[in-house]
Image 1 (tube, one colour):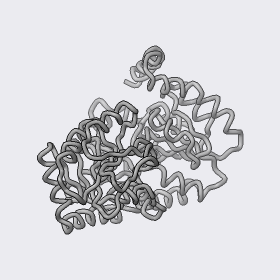
Image 2 (spheres, one colour):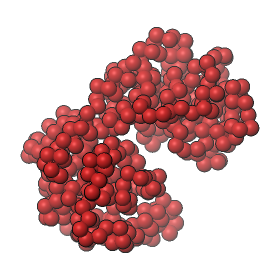
Image 3 (spheres, one colour):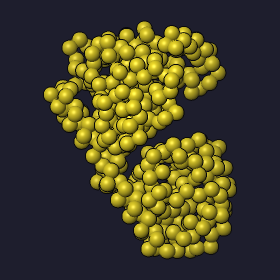
Image 4 (cartoon, one colour):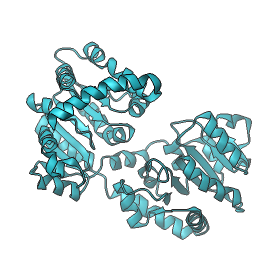
Amino acid sequence: MYTLYNFVLILADFFLRIIALFNKKLRLFVGGRKEVFTKLKNEITLGDKVIWIHCASLGEFEQGRPIIEKLKVNYPSYKIVLTFFSPSGYEVRKNYKGADVICYLPLDTKKNAREFINLTNPTLAIFVKYEFWPNILRELKNQQIKTILVSGIFRENQAFFKGYGSWMRKSLKGFSHFFVQDDNSQNLLNSAGFTNVEKSGDTRFDRVFEIIKQNNELNFVSEFKGDDLLLVCGSTWREDEDLLVEYINNSTAKNQKYIFAPHNIKQKEIDELLKWITKKTVLYSEKENHNLEDAEVLIIDAIGFLTKVYSYADIAYVGGAFATGLHNVLEPATFGIPIIIGPDYQKFKEAIDLVNLDGVTSIKNQKELNSELNELFLHTEIRISKGEISKDFITNNVGATKMILAYIDKRVLQ
């Protein structure tokens, strides 16, 4: 199987280069990797001490970020190398100031793995959540480089725990230590013969817990909201917006306002959303030309504001669970507000936990959305109670970063 894996990688590399000629995202995926080794040669010199952190995409970056920023402070003599697999992670965070070198992870061929490890020569390698690349992990083990997994999640249906997955289990021996999110992951690894496992929880809790300490003031949101109740619809897709717009258009309440921060802010999609809404609506990009107090709906057609916008919300709707996958529920939860999501959230442990606790409500259709929003808008005590559940959930789950840093301090970089 290992030989087949390497053969498939060579074929994939060939076909990806061809398909990339016709696909913008794949062009970024392929083109960005052409520069990796040149960039490493230019920015890492012999004698540099390096810590390498790898994230699949943007979500994993947010999990790794608390660790990166603590390492930057605690070990200023080390260069931080941050890699991404996905263009959606790299393109958004390629100018992140917390790392010294940011690049794509090269395709996991034997040759690439050897060259990448030789050029970076890390004292410590950190993988976030998942991304198990057999050749890279084997090379790290061969060179005796300390390698840890943080915020790891394992499931029974993964190849590691199947009869045919012995070659994949072998690659996991490249990890010096596993920090996992839950008991199930720890038990699965233990059953596969791995004892170097600790349940630390999810580092994202540490990240979002710090958000409430920062300055979250946005004057334009304050002006728009006034004394009204505010529903913030974050990271919404068309499937979410169909239901939300139907509710908003038919609402007769006079003390309710709504903010959309769509996942897709391309002009065509924003124009369509604007056209569907019958209430007085203002775009963020045109806010200077309008009296925000008079508007009932505000559409944020820009990126970078959503976290701070959540701080003004009385209720949050988090999108994606009717479409490609649920977005981040922890950011609104840290502000102590009730959250509504769609039906497809089973791959997200934090959402499952919050639904079970009743801080998050999952809806399947228009009727359920209308009922939940009406209840939350009309009943202050229910709104506050659900919000407190969300807030307590965050505060009760912080501490993963501290545990991981203690291990690094004592066992790796002492």
